[in-house]
Image 1 (spheres, rainbow, N blue to C red):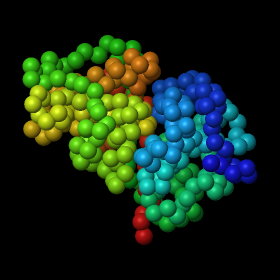
Image 2 (image 1 turned 90 degrees about the horizontal axis):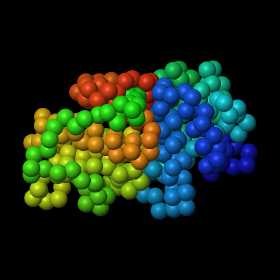
Image 3 (image 1 turned 120 degrees about the vertical axis):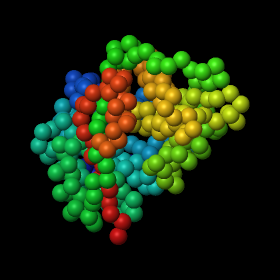
Length: 298
């Protein structure tokens, strides 16, 4: 939590609601920030009343704002736990002056932590990289992702592309039964990933496609993560090219949209052509680009 004299001050639930009211006017371009803030606001009480029980560092995050910033600038910083240390940066201010001041002066960011990633919109990269280089060692752009968005009206009209075979069914994921197989197959897994998957299912849910008599393990799955976007999508190799991934993503989008009545979004690496095609087939469009900066471990 911020000290009494730090430039950053923690965002309370009321501030987050005001933030959402402003960000809503900037959709779909700022859907990543809107939906991520919404997810934290939606789970605010559950997260903060039980924070000591959160096992995933990526779920154990908090939002901070510039102590003296202008509300209309929506300058916010999210900070997660140290094992999966991710700093999320955002502002609507065109010059980025408030954001620069925050990351230059705050004592809440542990720049010397061994693992450290920064996420920001593409148009803020030049600001962030300049300041980050002054704080510690060299950085690399580890990933560039398209922020893909789809309206709730488009989701309502989506049709399922296949009829599931008689021996296959769809069901909610169970955090205790299914987190390990998801973790084992996730390309970006780390030592803390199992907790990330478990708490993503517990907070936001997820769906799997199951084959009867297959040891109760899914053959295709996805869960909705702390950024409030469906993630971890995977189909085991023997079950690919059957339309399961598209079917499941459609089902998850409809589930989330029915529950929250929001436009939805997804991160798609610019190098992942197959995922980009899948999202475009469903009606997703590119709203923005997200940059990941990763500290080089010396």
